[in-house]
Length: 126
Image (cartoon, rainbow, N blue to C red; front, side, top):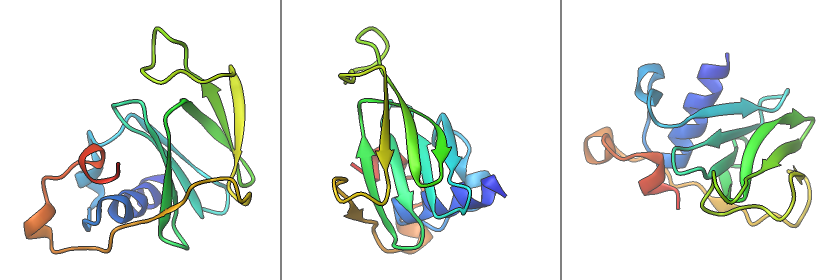
């Protein structure tokens, strides 16, 4: 089930219709909210992308690593200066998906696979 949800999130984020095997190597790890509406994906450049599957929107957080959802609140662990290019101001912090303070962006629409099959999350979603 998580693989299916993460595949949908990555497809929305990249604008490419991905299959289960197509997500391998695209990210380090991911979490989904209990209701499956939100997916947090930590990419290899240490950026956390949160995708709202129902609204087809996302935002990027560069200050830490996701540790899981509690309802619609994403619990984050702040990154230290040594292990992360953009360290957080706090060791632990929460991101409330229902709050107005997040800078959501619209996900790109799905394109034909032939034009974007080799794009990665890092190159499309910035």
